[in-house]
Image 1: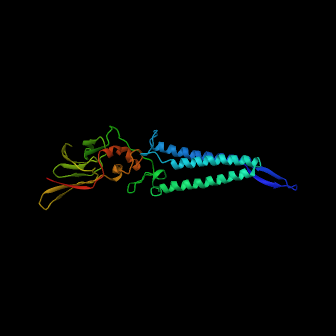
Image 2 (image 1 turned 135 degrees about the vertical axis):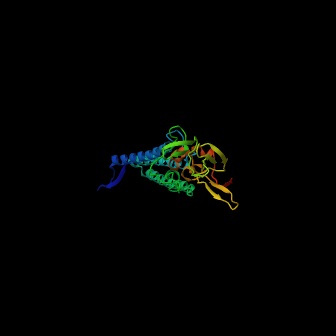
Image 3 (image 1 turned 90 degrees about the vertical axis):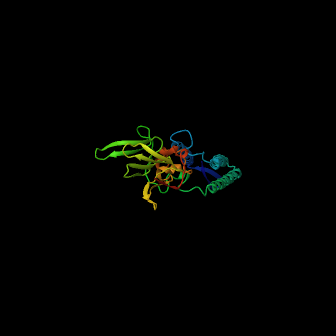
Length: 289
């Protein structure tokens, strides 16, 4: 790129002198290199979120029709500017003015296309969405780090463990190979232990042996605490709320993609199968015996 000035000598002759031509060229190449680096960083971020796999980290590729049009306008503008520079060097000022006007119109076109791009995603583009946001979900714990969860030693996801406090050792355990055990536990005086699974099973277990004595499938995953109470008829009842949620259960929500293993603060890595196992719900179950 050249910057030119018109100098009139005493003779009235017009002289065209290039001012700092090399510095302008270097500046333009720096701008182009910066734009290229931003595009490379954007595309690389999608593949990084996809766990370094050659696929998009979201359910569908990003919409690129407007960015591609703007990229084409920028390239055409560079070509027209180079053409205009050559015209100035040749002192063809009329054609140079046309090149300048075309560049100006291309700039207006770029702004117009950019406006359409913003209008298209005006309702969904927020500081908390798309590539501009993070994977944070309101109401879940905040972690200031990228966290990924996966099965531990043994390959299972969770376990209900009975622990002997005096001997400081495990008595028995019920492993869950698919999902973590996230619900509370109720132990009764009759040596029964009640708990729920994120698959939606509500179980009664022998407190001494860990044997599953009874279980019932609910409509959603269980993360709550079971309670027991005496009804007005004198019978004892067990109540449990079935409804997946919380930090781990957030993966079951339809709005959350399971393509990013770091999503939901890392919970997606441990909970990816949940969409095919259970679904969000809100049902209170009461069992009598």
